[in-house]
Image 1 (tube, helix red, strand yellow):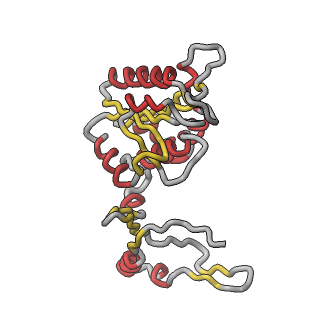
Image 2: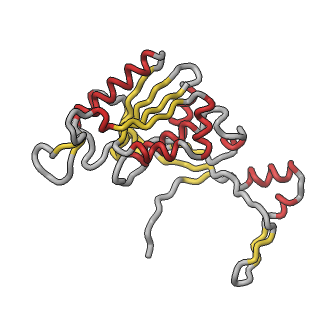
Image 3: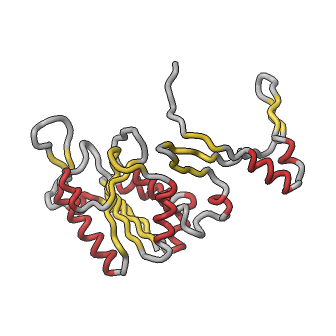
Length: 243
């Protein structure tokens, strides 16, 4: 069983996403997905979650008090229901989240009920002493965003879609793009290309783009051979702006 709590100051952002598409089906499979408002764990009338950094400098920093209160409350709830609980912090300085990790986590939930608390920093982040409570720090890539909500949703989506029953067809997962680290490099085994009607598409400048002939034969053996031939492995490239 899987239970994910996303701790954020923008719970409506998380709620809108998890109530759309295939993630909405998770409720039927008893997967718990919640957006937890960090401001609910403050004591002042302004619901203050941040303060200025020691030593000066720009920006604000999330205070420890509301974050740790949220962690203790959520952990206690999950533990009382028999879940093993972990705290994950999203940060560009964390270990790179990847498909193999996601698969391992979901496989683990088949034998153990796992509760994940995903912390979403903003501004200059959370008071660094939060590492005392954090089990894993994860990055979704070598870039900087304005907050942790998008990385948290990426992690949530990647995990939940792997739970059996979420996607309508098991082959959707079996046939998709795969990733593997070898010799310090990340290699991609691309999913075969997909096409749909019309079989011949004429561009505005008169060029005809056709669906490969093998896919129109109806011969499943030929189609399988063609698709496998298109699943090429190559090292993942970094996008470069060359203008």
